Length: 325
Image 1: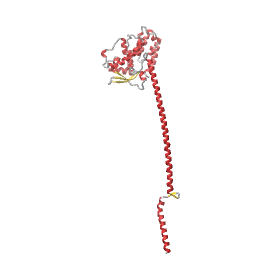
Image 2: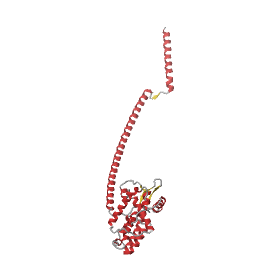
Image 3: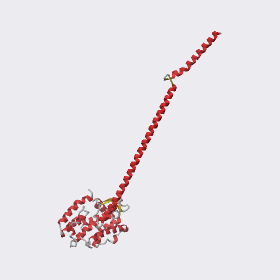
Image 4: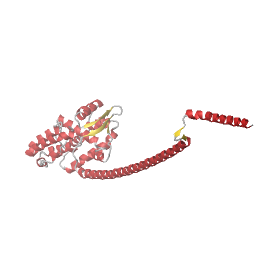
């Protein structure tokens, strides 16, 4: 079962819990949901009226935390907590991830604008929450340049390449071995991403990444992209149908052409057969004798018989001439 298909039952469980509780007790539900090893979608929980009622209360930080897990990243959380990454750990090729981080932070800023109470303070995370937020960060980075909207508008989706240096900075990981262990054990084995680790190029080639919750304002753009994709598909279908019709017409013309050729070949065969039969009968009349064809023995004996008859006639004429004299 795919990771997206596993979400439904977990979401339903936490939605029921959040719907039956109110106030401070919802903090436990939020912590449990954000710590669950198989839950990576939080929009349905955020939409529960009881959860939205935390807005503006003393427990609003848990609503902010839930929004962070729905749309934010590990670096966003640290920034909201006021902690900055250690400058000495900044990789030499950090500029490779600048645009990715800016895009990810822009998404989070959209969520922050939609929820004004996301303050500069957030609750401390337990280890399971830290792991979950880092996993979600990988999903965000995987969709930054080639996100789910882009995939819909392309027939073939190329793998998204995430440099190791950028991943180590975004995930606050100190070495390549730790990063690769995290990607293998906590991401690929879990099923949220599939890809290839390229140690030579020092990058992670993402071939599949589970989708995250829609950010505020993203639904309209997704609908537009889907509409464009549908239009493109319709145009492609019309083009394919025209090609099929053209191929059918060409096949029909070829079939008629072959039929005409076969008919002409048959006519030629009949003409040649009739001519051969006439020629054969003409030769038969010439070489036949008394309705039959003279055999070899008859043909060989014929000259001798004629010669003998000629000799007998000569003898008779000589004898008659001598008697008269």
